[in-house]
Length: 357
Image (cartoon, rainbow, N blue to C red):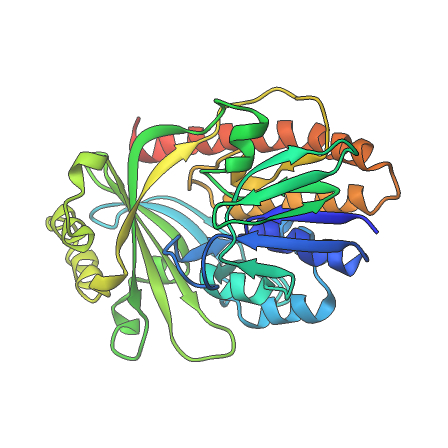
């Protein structure tokens, strides 16, 4: 039986593990975090038609149902507004079927995708190709494991990518995103301006700084939150990220100031925005890459999670097709590389428009 090793239990790695295990392959997922929730990586994720199709292709019915039941209520608006909440652009998406998932909470989504094939507290630090063509991974914590294929799904700082294609890591775009959230409850719900409560709204400040607002209202449990995501320059973010957002928006529409004032100050944290540069094909072998480990996606357009899910579905389909392993990997990479980097470039154009850069 083919044994697939996956480095990283993020969204793409977990979807791939579900698909391969469902298809009868032996799968092991190695995750550096000691537990399912150990790091702040963000809050609300947007899922589009491609992401939904990939989930249907990858997940067993009971897992898909679990993911759908724990997702957010579907929104119907994407809009851009000024800091005075004047509408600049709006696109409506009426009538999204309940069976479709338009948004999820990242942590809840990840837990819904978890499988017993995940081993926590194991950091893949590197690999070697054995004389028989198998892959032997070594762990930073000590020890090793072996399989027929290694998939680097280990994100922006991928150790697998650095060994497979050295020097092709993502570049810093000179921007920082400060993520946080405001709880939605009986007190705060009436305070949310109508557009901000219907979907993703980008509020553009006069100085080029912008703040995205998007709700997550869980389908089958009370409460939820309004995600707040401010994009600015790294030097503008002080030691207290929440205070930075408060001060940056102090002169904006009072309704925005009220929302941020109700924000959970402990939930705010910064991340550096990076993007992958296009990489040409390499010689296919028993090691490949998936998602942000290869085509690091800036957070514009909400396409990062969808790109990783599409990678997982494409790779799973090839590995389960009955092809020779290396032929299956080659077929996957022929699709994944141009598709992923085309999406990166689209996201870069969008973030340029959003930040007037």
